[in-house]
Length: 400
Ligand code: ASP
Ligand code: MG
Image 1 (cartoon, helix red, strand yellow):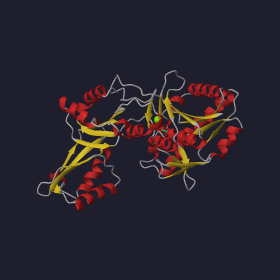
Image 2 (tube, protein in one colour):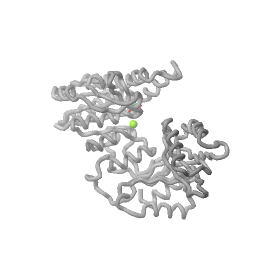
Image 3 (cartoon, rainbow, N blue to C red):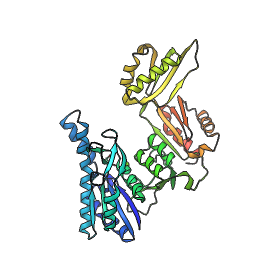
Image 4 (spheres, protein in one colour):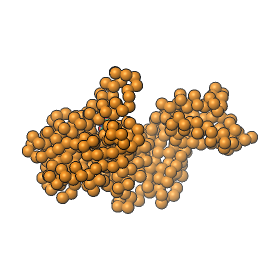
């Protein structure tokens, strides 16, 4: 009997009616010969509401207690779904992270799953029970409740599928993964399949369909992840390894954009590596996340150095720069930045992809302010106003 691990997101369990429907779907799937483990998110906007409550109590909620609070949302939906299944005559049992030993490490609010104790899960499966697990939560080394970061129920599901050697299906409010955000490009195609690495790049670049850690775990344990709508004939997308993909031989699989960054340029500083290293070290010591970096060639030993950081971290960054240069005269901040990226594992083996994109930019008069690349990605900082135009032109050229 195959073990099927399904995850239902907040919008899929937002009402009692929907929970009852999921109960039916899960029971049918079990009856067709599978063992079922179902991971649930909190109902609808519950997590936001809980955060809001905490913020009404204090401006700075204690992190341990905040995780204890947030974890309750998932426990409610798990218990309700188990009740609904039992009321329909099938045996079911709900579990919290503590009850099935979901061990985490790291900080509150963004903990990482390290291991799961499969004994109790196995026993319930052997007893023929449908298992419902509260997603998004874990227990740390000190025995305290933790959460995995927003959207973390995806990761609970993939981790359980990995542990039980099961099939993993993620049901959300989108019908799959698109080559381009359909809100930015109406003709965007839904992908039948996408490689883990591509999906990871796209999620870190702004495509927020899946919790990034879930993709990492899927890749590590080679668990294909289906993403789609529940109770629907519409086919979703499978995230899996490159080796078992039907390669279409396309260099570019998808496009992602993000408006969350600003570019900071420090002008006319000494290009000595010691100074530059000190500068970046002090920025890093405040956990400010630098993404793109570019530097001009030295003139009389002086250089300009530019980098992008999240908008929210700008003030803190400027504060740090005071120790390294004259912020008034030497620092420029450019808030008019959209990060535009193309992603595709086909780039590993196809040359000239960047060249083709720059040619398009030249022909269409799209100004590039900064560039970074990885083996499977090219990212350019462009102006906000050029975003939609660029998406369209590039998507068309690369047939996305
Ligand atoms: N309920 C949590 C959130 O809203 C976790 C999840 O839905 O995956 O982020
Ligand atoms: Mg999600």
